[in-house]
Image (cartoon, rainbow, N blue to C red; front, side):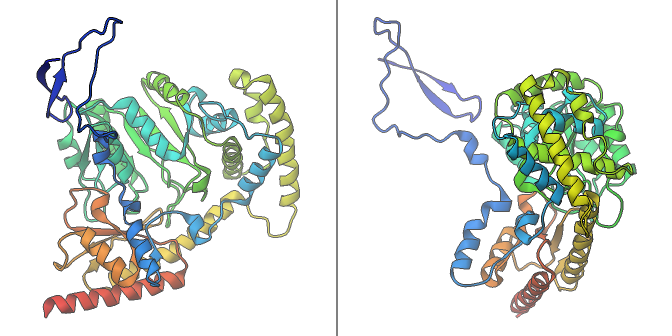
Length: 486
């Protein structure tokens, strides 16, 4: 069989040898692999898969194996540091399991949960999709909107999963700058838009910086999106966790003239990352067109655990009732009465047993001394975050060679390393971990074009541990700077 012509790969640009097929009499081509062909050939996209938040875990484990205490400040998981989701969520999950909501949930999500989200978001239920945490929601949005070679405007710094997902489909992250307080640079955002730009992404409150955007900033971003006819991906997973003020205003309430894909969930606002209950709600013009494509993606996989979705329904229901000044037990059948064709007769019958059971348990729990509302438990969490934020913010800024703007939301501090001892922030983070056991994430993992060396520190740990870590970083920086000057 003669070798065919060399053809150029559309993705890599490399030359590949194409062999001309020959018929074996049965309509199939003969094929004989080269003698040195390996069994496993890794897909090209895997070259682009990285995740800074977890990529250093192996090094941390090695450090820990030496007997050194490791301060695990890399992952934003409240449960690891002793925080619990509101008790009402766990109670509802227990009742859901009691009534056998342990099978496959509907592809687009539990109907009760979708209905309460639709009411809270002010959209039709057909524009609400329950996802495996907001991480899957990010994947849905990018898959539905972006082709190979196209780009999405992302904040620098921003949550690294966006960049990873873009690279995996051979698209491009188009990072817009932020200022010294990590507020979006709107002139830079506008300048980076081109004919291949498919969306603008905002993360508010921001991970990794804890920055909270003002209404004026959100309004200006909405105006840019309208001018260039771009949808907005609004990652609002931390919207309730503003540390000093009221919850953030949703971009969907501001950007009325453009499509807005809002992403939220239980993971952060309701202190329950392990539930893996997130959602996308599509607002604005042409949202029905996008909803059709989201439905395809939902149908192509199995939805998250049904019992935790019902815990999510109850969390949103209680929170809504409390926010509107009602007893948490009111209107528990409101979503049930709106089901229509969203649920089968069998599932409706299961709901008919489940909802009164939840009501009965809640009635008992509310009568007990020390009962706290869902809203009250979230407020308690925010109060704890405020104490820890202040400790870390003050501690970092008292250390020579480190500067940290004050985080206003979420539970992250994003600090700048202001000395020339380290060539990169990855070198700084690795060296800090090896010498002190303090595990932070290098800033370059959140954007490749940051103007300097940064690191992210999660401040969920006990105050005593945070204080200990501040002392270790201080000693380390003093020793490093002294050695460098010598």
